[in-house]
Length: 104
Length: 468
Image 1 (tube, helix red, strand yellow):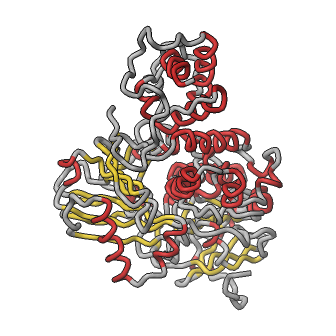
Image 2 (tube, each protein chain N blue to C red):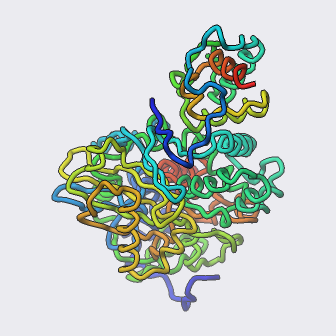
């Protein structure tokens, strides 16, 4: 899924490295605690226990509305504002934890 | 009471629903009059007839269908001018659709969306609007919390119901939402979900509606949600086929003015005559049910002082074919300014024509209602050009104003305002002696949807059979 980011109304990317979505050694290593907390958030918003660290949000039936609830929970719990595009590029608990670590 | 005052007239024994005086069959319900030939009334009438009860259905309009209505947009091509969508959880409606030999067709939702939320329009993949995702997520988290807390079977018994029933959704937004994007999106969301202006509904009603429909995510979703499918050829066919089976038992063009009960039965007075039966089923939206005169009078009216009409107008824009698809667009748009707050591709699956349905909801529906017909059409065409500048003007335009439909009094469903649920909830389905209540607004399951209407019809049949 690609998203047109040319709109003036589009939120600014909040991560420091929007061009590099693939996790690399240069990224800070996410804490297991952040991944665990995201697994719990996924379970809560998707209303299913079937979530692991590498579960894909959209394969579990997630949609954009629920994705925003995950982003809200991340902002609340971790103090990092990720964009919807960030989420599309990192739709698993582990990948989101990496985004959070990179965003700090 | 709001109904016209009728002088006392003895029931006309020649006009009994059954041809047999109801009193002669004391002890068991053998005759029934159903008021309203929408989905609820026809479901109820069909169920009663199947159990050997002699049924008469009285319908004010010269058509059946109520808030379902087919619109001919091309030869052999009808689209929904009223209720349209259903999903997998709508099990009662789905089994009715199957039993009637009708098919469902998936809602087409492939391609990019258009958003006009600021001075410039934008095109984006998917349905997510170009707004701050965390702000919208905060909004949905708050709404989910309210939705989860509501008692779905009896919203008036929800913890904190008294407070939630006092506050309007507009008050709640004012107090709770801080981010401008959440404030912008909230009324658009409620318009799309409930055809409501936030100022019209209580927080309790908002939470109940979202819960009743299956929760935020289910109610909002097309694929995997409440808008997954349409009924091929139009939802009105469900009603037309039910009415076809009932045959002469359905009487069109007879508006009901009064429902009088005595010890032996009920007499339903229409504009064409009086009908005597053991029981009556009022399958009408609450605001319409309150225009009927009841004797004995209703201890609690069906609608409250703050109950408002569902504010939905559908604009059906007709094109030679779904031209937006050639531009990689799904036809979905969300717009901050009206009249069209959202559009969706409702093209018939059989092809031959392209149809965009524009939703004018909430406050916009009221504003729109004040315009004369020429101005309305011009406003729709102008907006279509702004939202879809790549498309030629529509070749046809039909405007269906449900707010001003005398025999619906709003659409999708009545909007419960402050105080309404606490006062009217406890008697939502309670029979008034021999009078039973149907209609999607009496269903705590899938309230406001076709599924709720069908379930209310089934409930009423069970109630009447249980009378013995």
